[in-house]
Image 1 (spheres, rainbow, N blue to C red):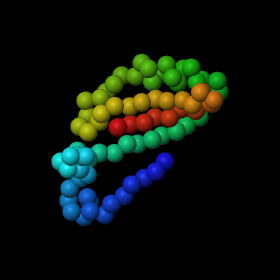
Image 2: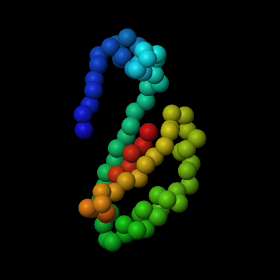
Image 3: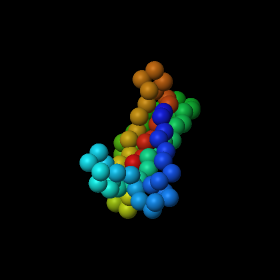
Image 4: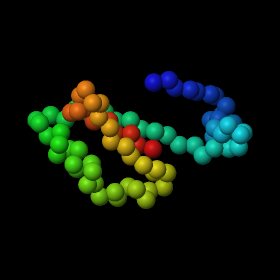
Length: 81
């Protein structure tokens, strides 16, 4: 995964800019990856589908995506925006 960096946004006290030059909101993406053991993959995926969504209204939280590679379905990636 490529990662861009620039000293100016942090040093200048402002976030990144959009393509038209306007200030864009800053944020981050968190990626967690784990492998489900004990043949519990279906149960773990069901738990994410039926989660309580308590964090959904928190400031800065946008969404969470739950992904699995098709060649390794017991591996789960949580991508939080």
